[in-house]
Length: 156
Length: 420
Ligand SMILES: Cc1ncc(COP(=O)(O)O)c(C=O)c1O
Image (cartoon, rainbow over all chains, first blue to last red; front, side, top):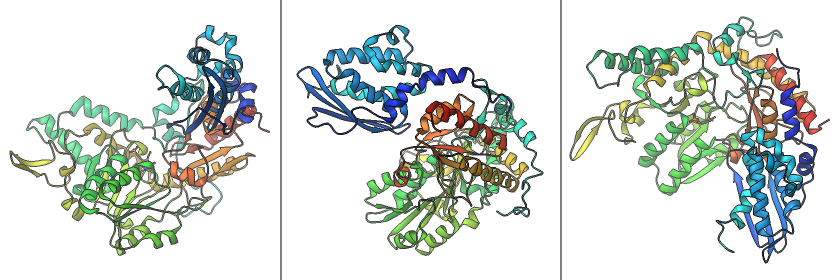
């Protein structure tokens, strides 16, 4: 096939997309499994590709004490859910929503957002911005969070 | 479909001029992310040859007007073009033009049957028999109908290799069965179902049989009389035609007695304040201004397939499918779904622990277009115990070197994911 065989540009954006951190969260997800004493749970799926995330929170006062998830799907959706827990546990709901906002801006290509250290491991997902159809994968777990504790959520 | 030289080891389609065929499809010349397009997603929708694009273009440039309405030259010509297209489609599947209804595609064809024949004939306690491998479009319309009518939907089991459990069909088919609806070819596993046997048994049980031909009509010569079914549904866009056009074939006796579906212009012969008289077949089921240009393109697509020869296309695809199964089968950690033989070139697979969406994204960066996901086949995927597969689907314009490009791109995925 003419043109095949050079791993140039396409390889570098793919390497940005599939960083080791992401593959590590995909293969060894943190906080995966049932959550005892969960105060919030919500399952969302992505009907187009079949990714599923079941997000569980244990909220104490206005603080997110624990985040667990169950799910199946692509590396981006699963890694994003796994990283969410490591970043959000112990934060207030307000702080968590601010992280969500920064994360969402990063996925839409905002360079300043991508430099924000509050995002922790989540910054590894900055490469998703170059693959617009995959943004919804990265946001699936966060849509659960938003529906459960975001501004439009009904108080539990 | 056996070809005489199918046992010889040289390519069975030595007289198949692949370069000329590829040159007929303008899109195949383009680059994607800097690489030549390797289009392996024809089961979702095929690409279009110049002759189809030109037929649509010429129709709009020289002929267009509304059909069946005017006494002026263009309307007469447009009506001729539209009805001429119907003859081509009908002739192609061994049917009479009055039995061929133009629809948007397979989905609309099946819904038409569910809302007309179904509304008139399906009653409480009746059973609708489907298979677990049906596309959502041959499942959901029947679930809706069953919900309305109080009927029961039952499903014939599928073996791990994708074949239907025919003993299960025999067991489930009874005098309560009012309808059997089955796909001719599976859009996920490439299995070719024994539709003639299924239709014969349905008839013996007094049930009506609908065959979903969306994945069969593009690849094989379909003869609705030989199949012996009552309805046959297929989409133009999967067989070189434009989107938005397809056909429903129905047995005349059934079409005559079904109630109309959508009401409006075209579908009436008379309207009074106290009611209407429906138009004769096939217009009874074609309310409103139809997709005239689509029908014209559909007819040209069929002519293109006929000129190229469905037998020869089939032989080419069979060779290519065998090559693809061998090449993919040789990739360590890659698992192929579906049967080894008697299948079309719709190849679902999984590769190590790399999710199908990740594969599709990576392959796309090398210009290789495949589909990832559940392929509108969620119950089948659940049955097979997978949440998503990657699917490469082949058509008349694909080549062995494109399969090599696919395998090569899988190598990149392996590298990125650190798969040995
Ligand atoms: C087996 C099968 N049935 C039905 C359909 C629906 O066809 P369409 O979307 O053209 O209506 C498809 C295509 O996606 C299919 O593969």
